[in-house]
Length: 104
Image: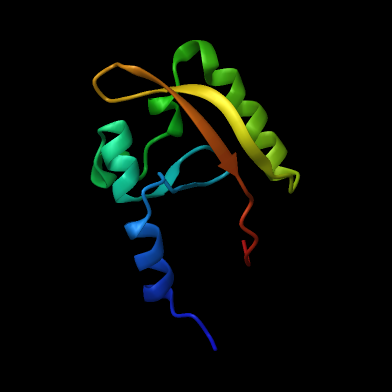
């Protein structure tokens, strides 16, 4: 049974976990409702912007390392770190990052 794109999209949208897709430059490509709730930015505010928007300045080195590892095809599981909400509040998060392979 093939799963439709709409079905997969509904799974992402109904998740209580922030599910964020970004390219290897860190540009946000998708931002689900849970990400909106957790970080305070709407999808319209984040899509097309850098993921650095939610990373405190003293943690930006983590993003560069994560993007490098993802570019090499690695996965990152349960990385404990700090991210920043739109209101400036820092929050402790556990992130998992996986590469998505496609024609590009």
